[in-house]
Length: 543
Ligand code: F6P
Image (cartoon, rainbow, N blue to C red; front, side, top):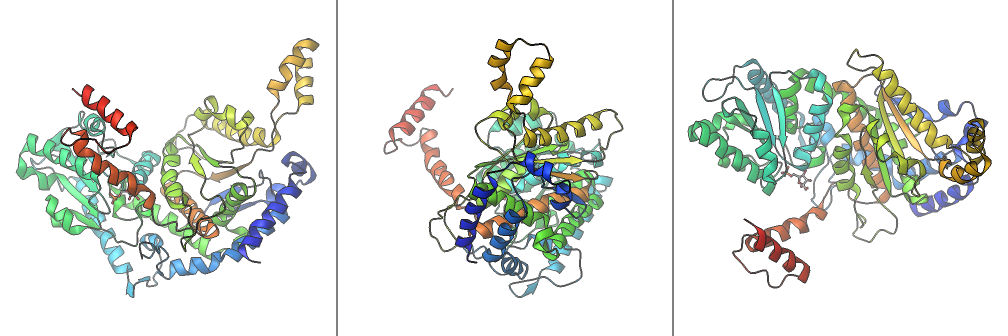
């Protein structure tokens, strides 16, 4: 079956399944959970609360095969330049590979270099954490500030928060990304330059936000401790080793990676240095091993039991057959509070595309808007819309079986809430049920008539639940890799290049052109009326 026929088949499946709902499907099949759940790398995926049955899933797997998922996966693993617009291989899996086989990119086994950088990270991290490497005046580092943006920030920042139980109180990691001076100002105001180590993280080492922040940090150290202190307070992570050296970073404090690692897939590379600083190298190594376990699952499990494939196909089902445009990621795990923000870059920068690999306009929807916040906070904010709004929003719920804290009854309550949410979304509440409930409360008939429509829940609202034993470094690695592979599978089905990001370029170009006008050095003439008006307001009101 050709892929277009596969999309058409989804349309037919939608018509068929729209005649029933999940409440009926659960009532008719006591084995629905067993039928539509799977495990991989110690993560349980329950996808039974979706608008699916076996026929729908069969059509989706057929679509995946028609799109050539298995072939594309092999191409990726073999180092083919599947990032065609940048002519690059996509090999982030090599960064966490735990096996002994060579992994070849452009004719070279990259594993010795990958392991060499990991060894250097381990040695440097251990030396900073033990106090063997100290600041210029001989004081032990207490604070590590990572300066980076996008993939050079979101991954390490999210992971450091997630692995808080593995951190040390006397060595804190901070993240500065925004070019807004408020960001670096507010981070530095509580820090002591004598005890602060900066990591400048930038794949290209040219990103304006990062270089601006790095220069301000450099000045902060030089002003406080003297220019000669700078080399002892900076490390760098980049593919552009020359630019790092030019900035004044000591050669042995520069940690490299390679152009076959995309920014948003780089948390496994030296970009993870601040994670290793915060949680120790051994935990960083476990994080890599967890991702590798998910890679093995993705590469070796038949599509029908393959977690990333299943999640990707369900996403395609809602995006292409139902037209749902957003996807909520709702961790019932406070420490995953930046997980949705991380996934926004991973997913939306990857699949927010509207031309096919051969440059033709797509005529099907591609990547959804990804968003979310941790439960239970979200329940008291935006869940109203998820339950009763006019849009249907497929959700992923994430929850650990075991908390890190011994604080009963917190975790049981958290679990009760996450189970309640997916159940409520699926079941809804019919008008008859509402009326019966209000009658039982003794409400008058007229009042019931007025109130009942507001209390009806449409139900049949879809969700996945991801259950894991505990949020350990291994599990976190597996979770992130799961979503990475999901994005890959969807990109193949949508026939887009998931590994470039040209959409961020125009804004960068225009900001560069506008800077002299914002500074008042050049006239804004030639810009559109709105831009000129805003520029005028700024120039009239800046201090
Ligand atoms: O936003 C565009 C982007 O290129 C991202 O893909 C990347 O993660 C980010 O900028 C930062 O880039 P760099 O690591 O080169 O500073």
